[in-house]
Image (cartoon, rainbow, N blue to C red; front, side, top):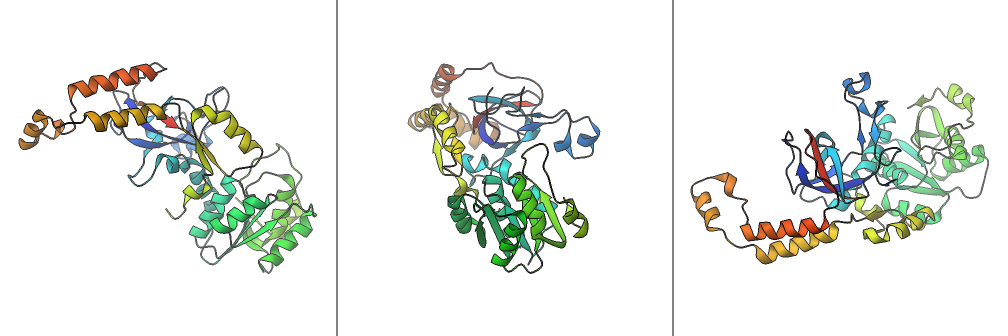
Length: 341
């Protein structure tokens, strides 16, 4: 199975009914494709679609490949000042924004984020962007906490000392002087001890948001939910999360680094990145004024402004022909994306 779901890419081919995208445009890719017909989709909550086809979720392959077909509506154009690397992080950033919004954070509130993985770190950053004045990041890996303190958190707590959930919550509250508890606690780890401690760390009447996914079933202090009447439910610099960018050939080594917790976030360049570099070199070398283009501009014919030399166009076709490994797509409403996972 092909992995990858946090991706960006360059459009290389569009279906004949696609009007919103053009070849060469850079896009962030939404990895889940819903049915667009069920009650959830029609109600605007397509993320809950029971028929959704999500990248890298069996039986569907992911985006860590040279080319990937995506509905045009789920490709989002990147502004000129946003790189493909940043574009690949828009999916986890969007998920973090959604999680934080569930907490209804307002200016001046205190927030505890359990877990300092990529999503937890982004949740902390988004919470700060929403106006939280105290953001406590909790994790068991000191290097992640050090990064978090420089990235977004106002306080960090190392939970590797294996305290009871109640003791852990008390220490977190004392560390940041949270009084009766945090206004909002976001659980972004999915670990059972963190879930238990999080419910003890939130104040009465506060908000608890479960964002992490762990075991299918966990034991949780249900009385804390009852007694506290809990609600269960451009300002972020994502570049800092990228530990390194590696070529496609080093993907296996990169995944091993991630599994060992040695890095924060690794981006894997798609196998066509070398082709794009070569094509860019050829474009700079062979680009020359076209008399027809000048004449067309003089006549005000805008359609001819982007012409290239015929010889250059043939050269590009030869280069692409050597590297293309999948059949082209020409389905209505679909685009083919050269992906960078």
